[in-house]
Image 1 (cartoon, rainbow, N blue to C red):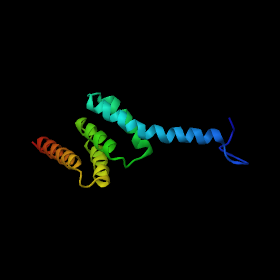
Image 2 (cartoon, rainbow, N blue to C red):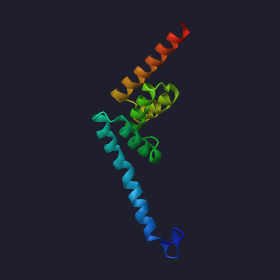
Image 3 (tube, one colour):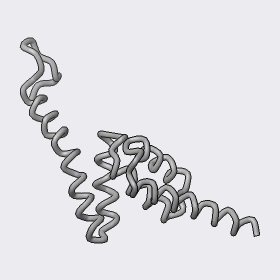
Image 4 (cartoon, rainbow, N blue to C red):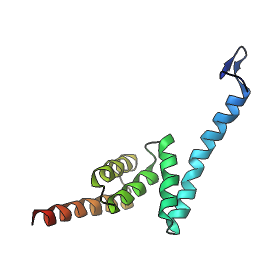
Length: 116
């Protein structure tokens, strides 16, 4: 394996193959995350979606679902950031609108409860 990615003839062939495998593996994680989500394996879904987000921070479904999982754990600020990204990616998506409304409602309910 060459020490550098660039050789006299251009990019090293092994680097091209490695990059191609990485590019293919990230989108492939999203269906795995969807399947895990659909079967209630939320930790597996979270890991798969986070791998997608590492390569594409604006991926709609991974942002939405990781955001929702963060909200369930009480991490409202991070949840809002990810859900806002999902809403920017798909502003008219009904599921995203409902998730955002629920999370904001939970936040208000929590704040009201803490004020008492």
